[in-house]
Image (cartoon, rainbow, N blue to C red; front, side, top):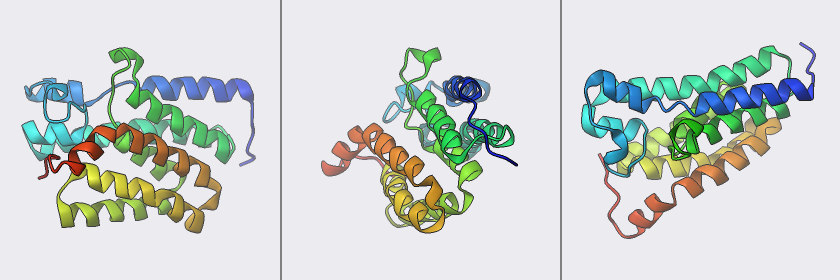
Length: 197
């Protein structure tokens, strides 16, 4: 397929990606399972980790899959629309940004890890699968979700530069955004107060 760079199409898909990212699936999932608001638990993050702490694996896995799917779907749309890799990366970043600062929830969202996972699988599957392996290894060793997420996302630029260099800018920006969103977790880890599993 010939890659195009229609600015109107890019703006439309970026807007759609931001709005899709702004849907925090942890909240409806918790309502369906009859669980408390995840924003009132643990770190206050509306993501799969906090859902797991109150409801276990089933609602947490559902949250993870749905949050990843919204990122993957919009990047897939950008791909079939024929947008360039750079434009697809912009769409991915808009989806992750939507999850972090969602318009539907007074701009108070989550860390963006699951949405980045879905977007990454759609745009750079090999890099993202390797990052997922890094996450799993760190999680197995230390049992701290935030630490696993930070190390995995920091491995992204190096892995993408080696495996899928056309997506290096995406993973560089994702690393910056997601590490900044984990600043409170970093402080708690430095103080030895970050909860594990």
